[in-house]
Amino acid sequence: MADNKERSKRLKEIKKFNSKMYKQYEKDKRKKVVESDFVTTMKNKDNILEFDNLRTYFYTDAGTVKAVDGVSFDIPMGKTIGVVGESGCGKSVTSLSLMRLLQGPQGQIAGGSIRYNQKNKNRAVDIAKISIKEMQKIRGNEIAMIFQEPMTTLNPVFTIGSQIDECIALHNPGLNKKEIKKRSIDMLKLVGIARADGIYDSYPHELSGGMRQRVVIAMALSCDPGLIIADEPTTALDVTIQAQILDLLRDLKDKINASIMLITHDLGVVAEMADYVVVMYAGRVVEQGTAQEIFHQPMHPYTIGLMKSRPILNEEVERLYSIPGNVPNPINLPGHCYFKNRCERCMEKCNGAYPELINITPTHKVSCYLYVDKSIHTKESKIGGNK
Image (cartoon, rainbow, N blue to C red; front, side, top):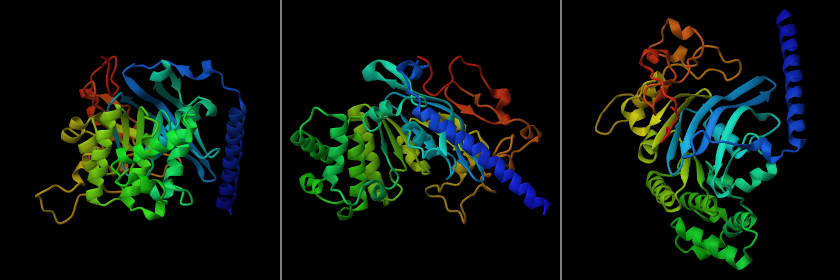
């Protein structure tokens, strides 16, 4: 009986708190945002994007889910950043926060900054504070996203051509219908689709998985974005098509000199594509560095576990390594390191406060007490660094 009363009291407190956050969300939505509120300064002008202590929470009846809780990393211009980690670690929520596509009022950016370098306007803006009207000019035009599942991304009742046309027409009001159609067909050719004129008039269900993924990439690149977010772009594809899509992304990145934020579970894809790697666990960055540093000198026990769990060519094992235990519940996370209960190198100090990211080299950072004595002090330790 006492337990039921306590549970009922707790539920009332959660609903009261959620109601307060929902009202604040609606109030902020109605508030007029002037340019001075969101114009900011980049810490490094060579970065196209800087996540700074980003916090994205979901206010649910069970409690506050801290899906992204203090994430900081940079995306340098013209580079590919691989974001890796197991399901539920906050990879996709980080990208949805960047695109401002969170389902509100439950999902909200609770704090931090997302600084975006608008080269075409010679200014930097904080996407976490920008108005919806301004964000609509950026989304799909300057920052594009390739979603995880092409069949659910494409609308089944509209032709491929009409869907690409809509994106181009929205951000290029000066083009007429003939010019828009030509550009759509050119984009289909660019991503390696043969018989582009016929595909233009086809419906999504008439295409194979690989073709649909190419269409989604064509749509994302139709306005020559400076930053492409690829959320598991090869998950639903077979191995040969995966290789083609990755080659395509790499070639297109070089052609339009874009940066890529590549979200994936596949460490092989990261090794092939990424210049820098960010490893996430339970909504936080646990390690980041160049691809060479992460693959040849992994330091965080979680990163080491991920590397050990991948199959190695010409090496026979009865069973692949798996990290023991489970990811902690994102509601009421503990104050100590979230990986503590799964870590094989856990020590007394791990019971203390959550470890901060420590600089091992100017580009390599790790969040673990094992390396406190190996840290270096630099003025700028973000990915990319100062030049």
